[in-house]
Image 1 (cartoon, rainbow, N blue to C red):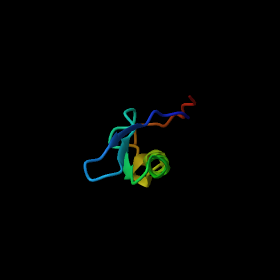
Image 2: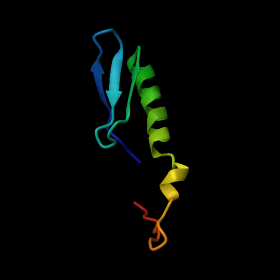
Image 3: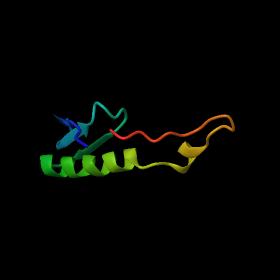
Image 4: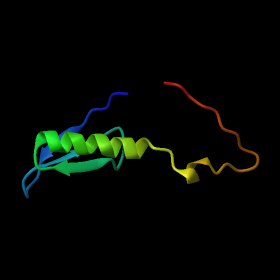
Length: 67
């Protein structure tokens, strides 16, 4: 998968980085390299399935989509 990350200089120094296609996926770092490393980890955690995600009502069903 590919994502675009937006890096913005922070007023306190360093960079804030976020992924527009993943709402709420945000991180920061003192350098560009650190910010990019941190956002990669944030993306992995964002996409990691959560056990509660699999609570399906009795009449519901699950289908897997491949992109």
